[in-house]
Length: 84
Ligand SMILES: Cc1cc2nc3c(=O)[nH]c(=O)nc-3n(C[C@H](O)[C@H](O)[C@H](O)COP(=O)(O)OP(=O)(O)OC[C@H]3O[C@@H](n4cnc5c(N)ncnc54)[C@H](O)[C@@H]3O)c2cc1C
Image 1 (spheres, rainbow, N blue to C red):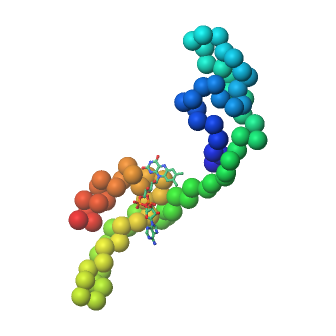
Image 2: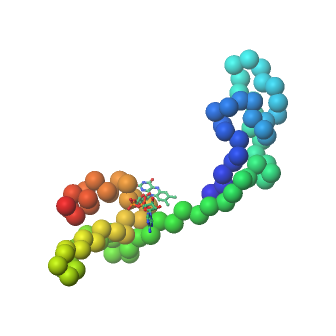
Image 3: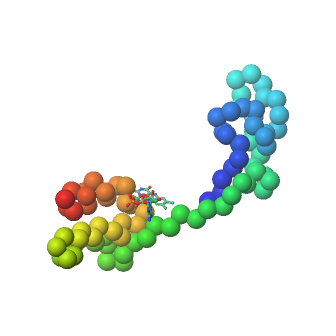
C-alpha cells in the first residue's frame, strides 16, 4: 500500500497540475516523490476458517477467537457473540 503525503481534501495539492478552472478539481499527478512510506497489511486466516473455542487455563477459561482473515470486522459481530 502506498501512502501519499498530500491531504486530498486540501486543494490545491502538491503534485497537481496547478490552477484549476472554478468548480473543477485539478488533475492529480501521482509521482514517486509523493510516497512518504510503504506498509503491508497482513490478514491472518485459517484454511479451515475462523476458530472460536474455549479451553481451561489454570483456574480461568481461555477463549480463542481468531483466523478471520480479511473479514474480521464483518464477522466480528457473530464471532464475538459466539465467544461470549
Ligand atoms: C489491509 C486489510 C484490509 C482489511 N479489510 C477488511 C474488510 O474489508 N472487511 C473486514 O471485515 N475485515 C477486513 N480486514 C480484517 C480486519 O481489519 C481484522 O480482522 C480486524 O481488524 C481484527 O480486529 P482485532 O480487534 O481482532 O485486531 P486488530 O484490529 O489488529 O487490533 C489489535 C490491536 O491490539 C494492539 N496490540 C497488539 N499487540 C499489543 C500489545 N502487546 N499491547 C497492546 N496492544 C497491542 C494493536 O496495536 C491493535 O490496535 C482487513 C485487514 C487488513 C489488514
